[in-house]
Length: 318
Image (cartoon, rainbow, N blue to C red; front, side):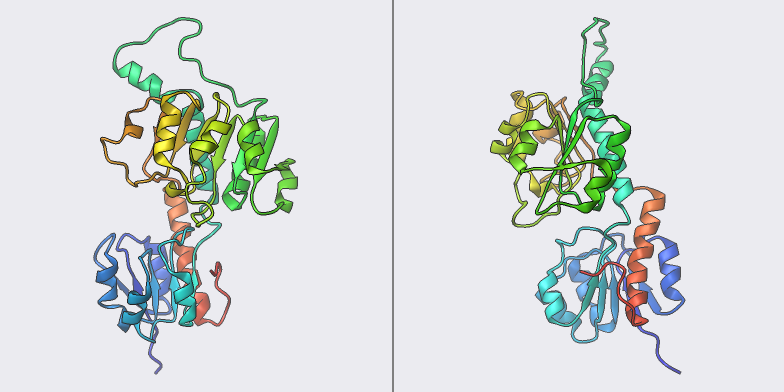
């Protein structure tokens, strides 16, 4: 009788549907914490053939794993928590869940955009303070209709955002990145330089992953190039933004408002200036947090592991 491969599931709140999928084929251990430290996983990983979890993985972790670990699957689209080069150098397959959460994150982008452009947080603060007025021009925001939308990073999330923008009757969709995307033809999006996008867009939505190139790409210079009526939305990664520059831009009217699902630092301290600004709508990295999407993310991560041991390509291999 052959011995089943052993799979370590690092988070005990991993949806049961994914755990059950793995248990059909493997000997599965689920750790007893929602979010164990890398050190806690490192202490037992040498006994497992596969890992499902979002864990910081570096050379020391892989040294502890030894030669038994064959595949790693993170239930996230981002992978900056892993040293991909080091993992591959050791012949370990590594996968993520790139496209599974795109629709949910696109929905959050619109929540943030609408909240920011219509001054929802400012209105709520005034409501709580009993300072509601009824003047014809009190607390005016801006329309989306007939505006120019700028998407920085037209990957799967950016594409889902662009599809939804059309229903809001924006007049133009601009995007920027390394190259033109054939998918952009579906919604007649225009490929432009980053500076052009900043200058011409009424709202700018950041969808890029964190890389050396994108780190703090939204800095003081970038915000100065935007319209003073522009809204900035970030559903990518917090470190793509110079937080101090954003606070300054929001405080002095360089830009109109911001909607943020991701920040630097993350989570924001309760005393942070961004938390105090009435024109900043900030939520705690909730883009993929729906029941349906989290189930799909976990299932896709589990399927990566199943595919590996069945000799098939991973669904989403890095």
